[in-house]
Length: 505
Image (cartoon, one colour):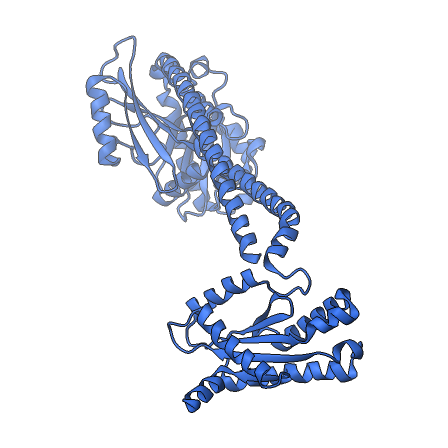
């Protein structure tokens, strides 16, 4: 019955796994198709947006004010000199300095936190927390000791257009930063491509980066101390950049990573409406990821395991229901209905399996027959006879425990299969059973009914590899009848029977 339950459970689980897997696979394919369709639509929107805003960039490209950069450099050099004379920045009157130079002042410490500033919105701003890429840039600028003046930038806290300049103190302890508000300048109000790019990256989950590269291979968004060029990139990057620039047609390549992440690198050609020399032709580099797909597939996988867990739970519940329905039938097919020990069919299956799979163990078979049992039925009735059989089965099971199993062949015939035994051990078991029956006959309940009974037993053990259930049973049966012929109420071993036969010959 246990094996049947296991097989039934495994069958339900296999069926459940296959069913859930098929449903999940079909759902996964539909999900992937929908994601790819949506991603393609988003790409069209993004790329059209980029090219439209690039036209706006051209309208402002010639209006970068070099005078502002020169003035920033001069004031930063003055501040650095002032720091040499007075390195206790806490004593500086930043507001007075701002009034004199007309620019906001920022003091950035080594953790890239704004510790002092005249621009109150930025006080306490930690670039290493909000803007890691920019924080790394500040570290490089601090280490170089050079002056840096950026083009149009956006305030991290307010989103306003500003221009910044940077210079590290001689001891590299601080970065001196100057900032100018450009919101009132109509030229810089027109120039908004960088902000658009940032907004696009923030808006679209799969958009990783947008950069502009001039025809000479130099990135317009130079956020490092040295210019970023195509030559600094991978060979594959250089190859596709040259192809896009040469044909002035969009090209792309992909890189696949072990975690399922796929990076798409798009080179989008752009040519200004008004020819302005070499800078009129540019390449917009756009990097896409497949984060939406990865996240969706992760959720799909999670849903699969949840669904599978629920399905397996339902399978277990179904097994319990089926087991309850079939348990009585299975029990009747396995056990003797009256005594609760194994029936003959189960005995044959178990002993054949035992003989087939034996290793160094020596199985044995002990046959038990209740002598004169018919008299109990005739004198006291079949109900009392059933009680006798039940009590006999109880005694046999108590003696065997886990060393074997008990079987009822029919009527008053029982058997004990021992998993591993010897002639001496089998005789010991038989003698113990005889003693138990004799005790019941003379001291137990229903002495009158037991008084007419005795027990005859015969045993045989496994002899050689060719032994089968039938040959083992036949030898034990001969030993049993030897006990009956010798006066009953005793045990005989087939070894003794065989010895007597050899001696008589």
